[in-house]
Amino acid sequence: MSKRVESALEAAIKAGELGPQLPGIRDLESMLGVSRTSIQPALNALVAKGMLVQAGPRRRIRVANDVGTGSGKAAARKILMLESSKLGSRMMISTVIAASLANRPAAKNWIIDHQVIKADQSRSNVKRWQRLLDSSGADALIVVAGTRNTLDWASGCGVPVLALGGDTSGFPIPAVGYDSDAMATMALDRLLATGHRDICFPLGVRSPSYVGEMERAMIDAFARHGVGFQPKLHFPQWHSNVPEAWREGLHWRFGSRRPDALVLANVRVYQTCLGVLMELGLKVPDDLSLVVLGEQSELTWFHPIPASFDLDPLRLADKIASWIDSPKNEQSSFILQPKWLDGGSIRERNS
Image 1 (cartoon, one colour):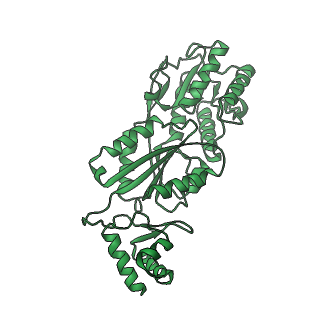
Image 2 (cartoon, rainbow, N blue to C red):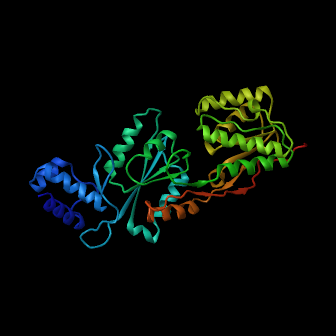
Image 3 (tube, one colour):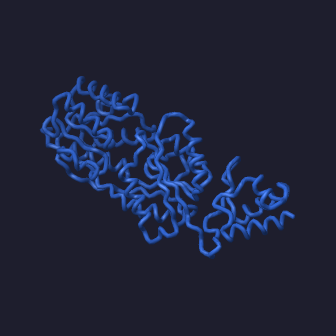
């Protein structure tokens, strides 16, 4: 009996009548008119053949990628692009990438489902993410700027996963992004070469691996230029990522000793720092220089436009497209080198 059930299920899958997720066992019992003792061995056999994928305990069985539809053509691969944001809004870079992927000739074989969920700090988030993934019927997942919590869940979610940014160290997940260590090194070398000696690179709450990477970049750069490194002043770390913590921390730093340059990790932090500088009556670059480790196109409305980087999203989209073509086989990370862009936020100092 299980062989006949296996043949019936296989024919329905190839005809496109089942998928991308299979119904539950009870529904299959009703559809096929047989008991679960016949259905389960048939499902196991189709998993062994590679037609079905068992994502994990208590998760729906999925039809494998490229198992045919009734037309004889491969079914379109559905990719869930999941982004978590405190404000529930998309980042510019992810929006450009999603649009680029959707407009490529190969997109006739893809469905890019770009979704943003409002972030919070509770671990119950992972249940929401899993429900969202299960209901989407996605064959693969792209996590945008994932936190450690998000990536921990994604590494065992049951479908191939790619990280777009975020800290994937310690997770078996391929990643696409720009080299943050290279950005920090370029920024520090440029500032030190132009006579800056009291550079402050503040961080909020970040992963230990990212913090360690940035601190090593600072220590190495200061050593190359013969400058003493004082962690508390040159590399302070705030207790939170909220604007109030940044405002309090920056006021403490400038009250202790005014730095001659700031290196800021992203555009959001830059916006908060501008408010603090206005409160203190300080101007960029007259009173201090500034570099943002971010994409300059997101900074063009500010004056002066700060020194930053060309982080072309289309280069990332090219790498992501290669992964979408074969997510199970393409497990290499693609970490690209950034391009430095001068701005009006650096003024040479007397060393």
